[in-house]
Amino acid sequence: MALSAASKSFLLLGECVPCLKHNASKFKIRRFELDTNLLMYFRKVDFVYALDPEKKCKTGDIVLIEKCPEQLTRLITHKINQIVYPLGDVVDPLTGKRVVGGKFREHTEAVNQVYGKMPTAFEYDSAPDRGWLEDVKDFSHVDTYVKYHESGEDQPHAV
Image 1 (tube, rainbow, N blue to C red):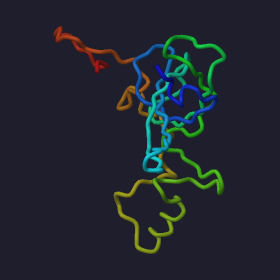
Image 2: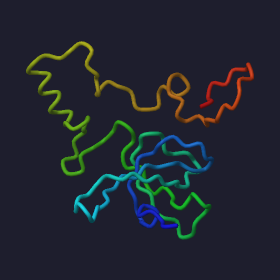
Image 3: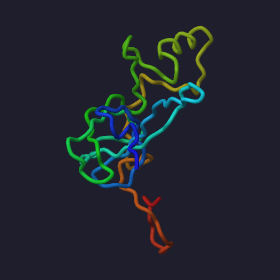
Image 4: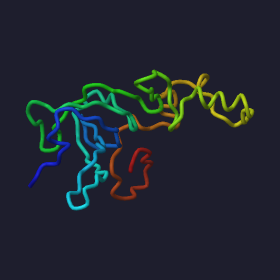
C-alpha cells in the first residue's frame, strides 16, 4: 500500500476538522497533484491525524503540524507545532492586515463609508473573541460520540 504524499512530508499546513479520537485532532491537507497525461495540476485532499492531548485546536483553525520521529499509532503520525490562524482571524502575511474572505477589512470599511453601511452589517471591531459562546451555542470543545440507538434519555453531544 502506497503512502500518501501528505503522510511523508515533514511539515504540513492543514485545517482542523471535527474528530472523535481522544488525544488527537484530524486535519484536512489540501495539495495539488500532477496528472501526467494532461500535464495539469488537480486539487487533492488528504486527511492526517496529529497528536493534540490538550485539545488546543478547534474546528476551522489553520495549524502547522510536523511529523513525529516515530509513529505513535497506526493513524497518528504527526504532532501540532503551532496554531497559525484561529478561525476567523486570518492575517495577510505580507501586509499584516486582517482579511475577510478575499478582501481586506480596511477595503470593506472604505466601501461602507462611500455607499453607507447596512444596519445588519457585522462589526468586527466590537465583536468579542472566539470562544465566548462555549456551552451556549458553541459545542466544538465538547467530546462527541456516536449515538447508536434511541434510549429515551437526553444525549446532547451525540452525532
